[in-house]
Length: 413
Image 1 (cartoon, one colour):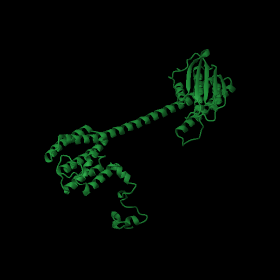
Image 2 (cartoon, helix red, strand yellow):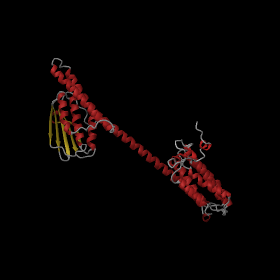
Image 3 (cartoon, rainbow, N blue to C red):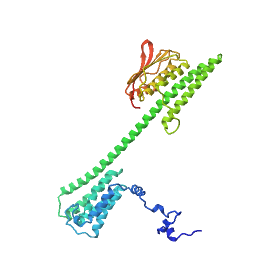
Image 4 (cartoon, rainbow, N blue to C red):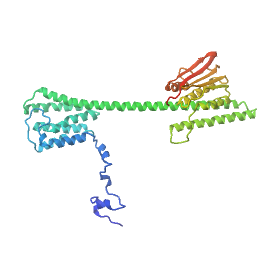
């Protein structure tokens, strides 16, 4: 067994850290540069309270600054002695912890200030009192009124004693000094309220961002799931009546399988949006896939006439995705509310915009309210409005239900 020297066991000798392969004893007690910020936050220190406290402590002992500090009550100046050192320390050192213990720090500073004024030292350390009040107003969260009343009540006997011991200053000077202290407290309270308002603003922004993201995910899920599931349901119901025609039944079941695969692909793309660092790189829906969408709807039993005019611009931003969603939602509604009715899809590409129009002949069932009560149409209206376009859904000529959208091209996502 290897025996270690006693100094290493106690951690009192440098040889303990010089021996290779051995752990440094009591390493948790060693203050390294990396631990300084942790200790700083642990003891409630701030970036300016501590330097000011140490600066006041050092400046108060400079002979040239003696009796040049705060003078309240007109007490005759007194030479520095042991009590002067005590008064200076009581006023300056509590600034180091006034953020974590604001009331206790203010009480100690006030006691040192009273000793400083009653003895006539008038040191620069008296400046610590308004700083301590600023800290209390800034960091005290509870019992603020009680604290303010207690220190205000303590100021009255101090003013009376100073008026008798000193040269007899007027009551107005004591009131003026008290108002200056109140101003320091009020400034701290204003800083605290501003900080709380900023925290509340950030919380609301975070909540609004989360709500907007949830709404976007809900729209994507609605567009993807509703369309594919509706097509699968329609195709599966049609397959029930094709048992006497095996070839057509096989075609219908193949269409259901293809629709399910496309649904899985679109869902994977949606998951990739939620977690970009995982999964395959699936491209977003584009206008180029409109023909596939129309063919899928036709296989579901909906007669669709598709017309595409113009050439897509090189950079459309999110316009092509929104155009795809408009056609997708309109065809989904046609399958649900006007199954078997003739539907026309017209897409025209311009230099600065994409025009989409989907019209469906009327059937016995009523389409969803175009005013926005339906999640699908409401989501489309929001998508188009974000890009600065126009959206309309309602009755058209020849008793048709028409969905129109003008989508500016090149808008950011």
